[in-house]
Image: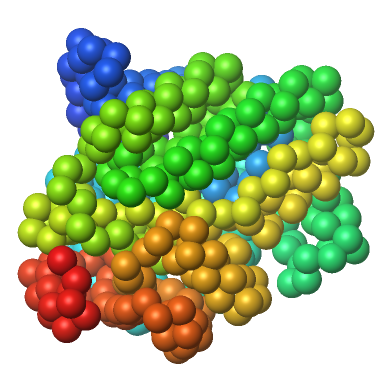
Length: 434
């Protein structure tokens, strides 16, 4: 393996070196311990990274893909892939890990405006530096923002990625039957693209079984969200984040994932029944209406300890995923299409209608008895920022306090954690919370 290929795997190897001993420690915990529920999550990460390394070392075809593309299709085609921007959110070499400070400083030196989304600038930096494995083909996305389109145009011209075939499903704006049919056709074209560049074909019988299994996972996830209405809420922020990860990464349709959702739901129900919340002394129920920052653990730990604040619901967890009708091939593709371009976090809020934001906040505040709504206001989410006044008006009509922070979800230099804590504390005091 040449030096470039080895460098592209360096961060993944670092993460494996971190995850493997942590997994070994978690496996020793009793089944009732909340940490034991993270065993399956770490196994997934380790398996995915291990397969990526194998593909790079052996020359086996593999893909890079974005989170909007249905993982059921890739699994049914027996093709390995890695989540293209997952590296930024990992806990080791990339994202909020040991290299973040130097990566941000190096990122600043690129000829990209610093008011562009930091997530996109970081992803571009990782590619420029050769820190992401170069796939056989790439499954892109062009939503929800203009920054995404610009980012893809930039990296497809990089020397190391220039010859990588790219397929980006074209998302329609509307959500009527005609739009769904159109995007279902885009997914079928994506299948043809994968076959052309990897030699892998789609097994429809297998796809049906996989979708039926992921339907179970989605159903259990939604049932878990219902349990989260309880006060006190059963878990902190880690379990809800794991829900999204488990069903949107490699290995879709694995019954072991379904069992994980069953175990997680059972743990939540037990905690409610026995009044044994993972986070004790809960006083403030918050809706965090955006994706979570790299340093979310530090913020949530402080919220819990200083104010008794708990994230009772968040934007990533609260998406209206519909179960896919598996009766026919067309119904499967239409169901996957609807979920892919309408329901995912950021996709629903940013490329969708403003009514989605109003309806989500209204339903969540009422159903989860929220004490306040916090909109982090990531500097790169300019499409979301355009809805901030709508969010404020919605919360005003509901009689619930609303805070727009204004921060960078990846870069603490934009607004430090201490500054965020001061702003949140002033908000709580002014609103008589805590």
